[in-house]
Amino acid sequence: MLFITIQELEAAINYWRAQSPAQGEELILSKEASALAKPYALMIVQGSQRIPVDILDDTSKDAFSRFILARNSF
Image (cartoon, rainbow, N blue to C red; front, side):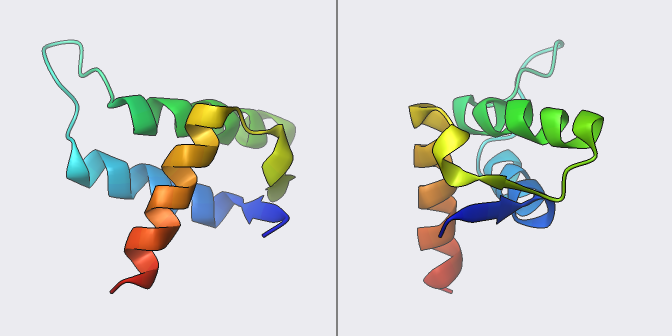
């Protein structure tokens, strides 16, 4: 996979939010959802529909890869 669409990134964030709901009064996101929220926000601000996978940091790549594995196992 060379690119990630904004829809895939949103689905991954929602997956991690379902796996580990936000915590505390501050509604702190899980490590995975938080890592994916950063590139998602940039995509919204820039009006991008897709981003290259290689611009993601290691935490974001790991969270997205684990989401894809979980999605494909259904």
